[in-house]
Image (cartoon, rainbow, N blue to C red; front, side, top):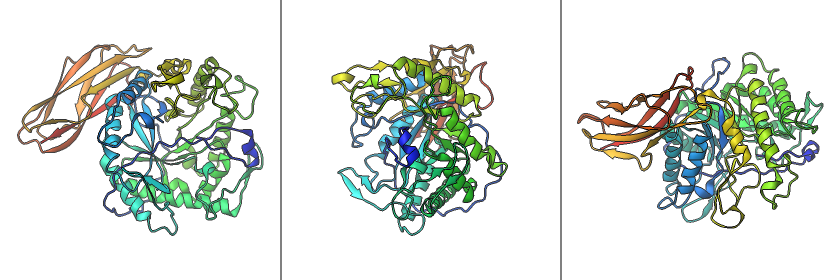
Length: 506
């Protein structure tokens, strides 16, 4: 993310990105499919609700792959589900050595999906230094023009999609590309200037070349993802509030709409709307400026769906060490603004998920953005704290998110011999605003020769049901991702709450 600051208008950019570095498996090469998208406006993702949150919780998740205490991670997952948050955003890099980190990625993904939380991955190109089990090693940045390591990136990406396509269907490509640089030949960051509040942009040749390089990266990534999962959706890297209009215009010049299913935006501002403060620009003005430039694209691409993958307001009350001027003057105002922000975005055409930044901070304790303050066992963060903004987020009306279900065991994967019966517990929680009556459970994704049954079914919120999966001697060996779906009288088309666990048959 980037911290909004008036100095950006003169070209100075203050980056505060909190990248969630996750290692994943390297794999075999895959052929690149060169595809041409059909021209069709995108509808909302099929999901249970539109409320989301970033998960910048690296310290509580990742270890050496052999031993790790996941207590803090489980609390985060529980907090997420209990707030009606149905989307989590992880940032992933391709490091040179993945053997020690991939098992932990599987663990955390399983925890999220078992609690009915969908995961979208923000895919980053190769970093200049990658983590290994014993330290770091240098590696070459992806360069769409002349870098021989491009094949390594596409091979890693192909295996990632193949490995996780039963669980993950949405991929955001890079992050705040318009404001963080790195795509320019001279490795500097040319500064585009707005010609008007909402209007054209003055750009340099280097800037235009940089955007063209990003589109080549987007093309390679889009084709690789689609070749390995034709149902997956590709989202452009969320644009920061820094001259996002200029980047939207240059994407159009490069026909980037051929390599995306959705756009993404980070409309940080001084406050949500004019009714909240007199500062300029506010988030509504950011959104409207972006929408004006998107409207200039040819039909039907000008109606492409937009995800909000980061938004939020910090306040200095949470941590006196935070030196930037707070946007929200106090925690209560922050909580009020969250409701105004989410409502404003939803009422102004954003039907795809909206993800708050963030669930809680990655530093020693929260510095203002997080919905919660997580216990790190010492000092000012020795106790878990649920901030007013968490309660406000939980209370936002969204009938599709009024339930939380958790399926256990989720990790390590439950293993049975072919012909035996596997049993899972499905807990159904009643969230604020629930009014859908009893919940009906179904199971899909069963391996051949297996049957499933729930007892009881339907189940009343606040109780649980046992899922019995009966395999046969003919059931093939291997991993079977099983999806548990919960529906009630409020469930609309495409809004069923899905949770997933993996059964291993041996």
